Length: 324
Image (cartoon, rainbow, N blue to C red):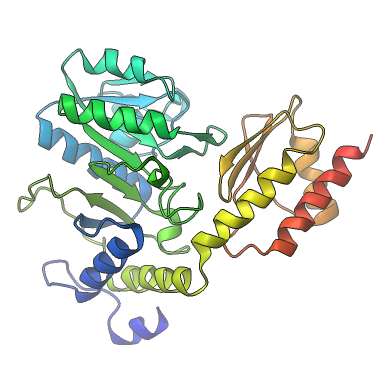
């Protein structure tokens, strides 16, 4: 990014930026979606906003199916598709959204049968909800149902993508190819950037989507650097391998009700509030963890996690769970 800034940091998208093309090609190769188009924006919420807009353009319909406990962002349509009324203002509630249980294909089918659905949006792994995996068989059924009903399937991979699950995108084990995939978070390793990967089934029209800052030179430089490091250090493979180690060993610990997730995206469900345990992890072992609700610890370590670090966490947690 420093090198890029010394050349040019920003210019209008009315002039072609060759780094955007390079990023699109390298991202397509990394995730196996080479024939998809890439629209670049600035955040995950913006990516989902544009994905929903594109689905409505494509189908001419407006109703959306999302899933209970979903989180898709804090802007207009994205927050309307987020199952948390506390963060929805009145101006966000114009979009009609049906929330159905995750992994319940019959519930999705019943809503689609009403004939007014433009899109189904689903996280590859629900993050904010406490690490709930969209099952492979469910995603396969969802793909068949959406295609037979001419409904757009949007995979929100903003938190679960970019190697987090042990695959580039969390939906990959299902073998499907969604109509649209959204990404952000890990894409720029801290620099604001988001992306919408769009199936060749969609016809691009001038002016349909637009952005002032999306795909700027610095963002593209950051994203290219991320892909380079991920490939050189085999970070997707590392997430997959260490995820297995963590989950296998965490399942053996007494005191944890459930271990769920994939790769380095893991949820630990307990029967009691986890705030004291999280505080002890920080105070005694300098380990910071995430949380969902009151009883779930979320593990989202760096993809550069080493086996020694993973063992340190397991041993630290084991010591605390044995403490009366």
